[in-house]
Image (cartoon, rainbow, N blue to C red):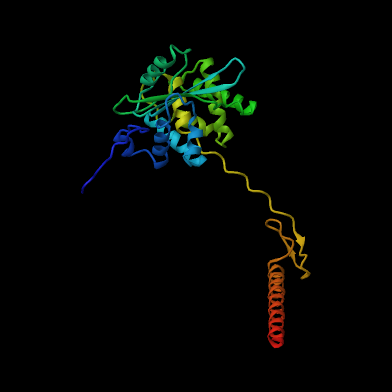
Length: 290
């Protein structure tokens, strides 16, 4: 097989082959990562907005982002501002980074940040390449306050029962919105607890980082949109005496609609035929007068 590659003169991005051939990244995850890496330097654009531009649907985006976080290509840090709103800082790299490496890159780019726990990546062979950090408008301030409180209570309960996941009060407050998002998506407290505690390693160096990683990586899919209730029964207005349940804005049953369409078609074809006959009569009269 012959291959011929023409190097672009400008507007190109160098992409490691390991991304294109990654065995655990879905096509949507690869597409999202490549689109994000192709943005010009200095462009401050969150992943969800890039997903919209790349034509990635919401459910596929959630899964793709989860995969990129699990493989170490995306790291996130959440912090609460003075006004109480939660903001997320994202780091996107063309090579997998450990939590420590990602935090070092972040410190290099913005200076020493306030003490926050990093997200945990799980790459096998770190390869530092071009990275891009984005401060996004993503936040969880839309969560109902009771859900955030329940999320905090669930984390506190896990922390109390599982010694390996002992969290400080600050850690619980920082991670409560993520736990609340689980509840918003229909997860039970037992499911949340099992996701955090199943298969823990023998030694946990950073309980907050591990908890955050699992909350993000195992986040359940968004709950499906509720099905609208069926419309009320109504009498068919076509005169047949039937009772129908409209699906949209129908006012008559299928048979009456078909009969009405057939009658309208006959009226149109009759009118066309009459017009043709009239035009033929006119032509005949004109020809006879010549």
